[in-house]
Length: 95
Image 1 (cartoon, rainbow, N blue to C red):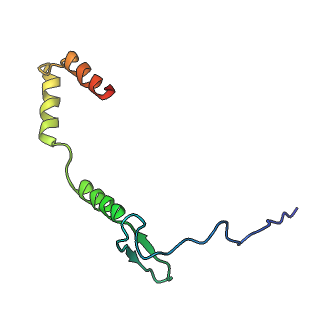
Image 2 (image 1 turned 90 degrees about the vertical axis):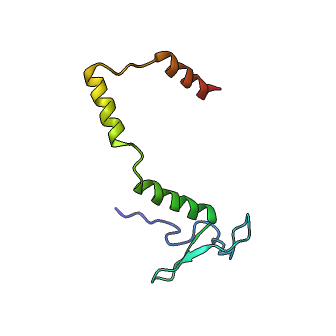
Image 3 (image 1 turned 60 degrees about the horizontal axis):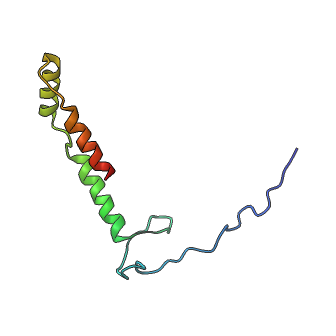
C-alpha cells in the first residue's frame, strides 16, 4: 500500500526576515555562519542569557562545608527547625 504526501518539500510559511538589527533597539546582532552557509542571529538578550548560563554552570551554588555541617547536626540531633519561621516565609511568596 502506498500513500502520497501532498506538498512534500514545499515551505510551510512565509520566509524568515534576515534583518540587520533587532526590532527593539536596531542594534546589530551577532551572527555565526557555519560551513553550509546558514546563519544564526542572536539578540543582545540571548547573548546575556548565554553568558549567564556559562557563568552559573561553572560556579558552585551550594557550599559543601555548609551541607556537611547541617548533615552532621541532623545526625547528632542538634539541628532544630523553626516551623513558624518556615510558614511565615512561605506566606511571603503568596503576597
